[in-house]
Image 1 (cartoon, rainbow, N blue to C red):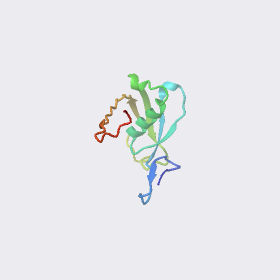
Image 2 (image 1 turned 90 degrees about the vertical axis):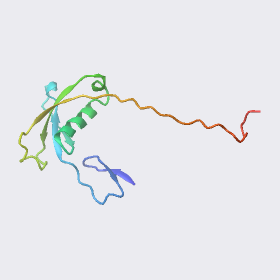
Image 3 (image 1 turned 180 degrees about the vertical axis):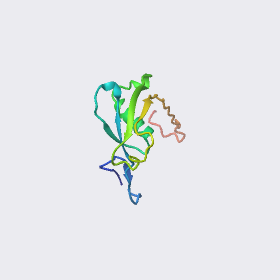
Image 4 (image 1 turned 135 degrees about the vertical axis):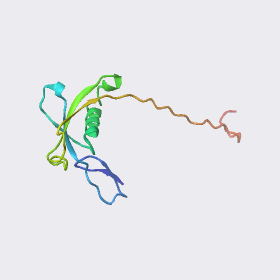
Amino acid sequence: MTDRCPKCEAWIYSYERRHECPPLWLVKCPEYDDETWDEVYAVAAEYAAESWAEEYDADSHDMMDGETIVVVVTPHVDNPCYNTCDDGAKTFTCSGEAVPTYYSEEIVDDKDGDSDEN
């Protein structure tokens, strides 16, 4: 059985004995003149930036077309790093790329002569 954590939305598998949410970060894009910070769970600030960018780019895919976006990440007050992080807020340039995936499947001839063609 799999389920998602209602807090951080990570996948939880039945074989896991317990789940701990990763630290909480605040992320915003200064380009947007909006002072709204989005909450993102991630193990590190750079992964919070990537996660935010992935969500942001989900509809437009502009970053997969070569555009970049600058985001600021800072620890949330509930983040264990909140009082111990040296730099406080960090700035990241986010980009993406589309990676094509190809598949193959073997075509097996019917060698028993049991074909539907007569």
